[in-house]
Amino acid sequence: MKREEVRRWLKRDEAWKITKIPAKDRPALEKKLFNPKKFGIFIDPREAKIVYKDFEKFPTRVKTRYGIQGRGERVKTLKLLKKFLGK
Image (cartoon, rainbow, N blue to C red):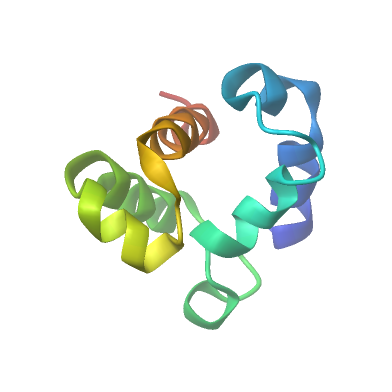
C-alpha cells in the first residue's frame, strides 16, 4: 500500500470511530508509526505487523520509538492497527 492510501484511510470516518482522534491529527500517525526513512514509500502488511507487535508487547518502548503520549493513545493506536491489518 502506498503512503497516500494509508493517509486517506486514516482520514475516513471509520478511523475516527475506532480512535476518536480528530481528523487533523490522524494523518500524522502515518509518519509516527511508519517512519519514511525506515519503511520507504510502500507499507506492506509485514511491516505493519512489526509495528503492531511493538505496541502489543512493549508499551514502554512505544513511547520512545513512536512518540505516543500515554496509555490511552497507545490503546487507540493499537485498535487502529488491528483494523488496518484486518484482525
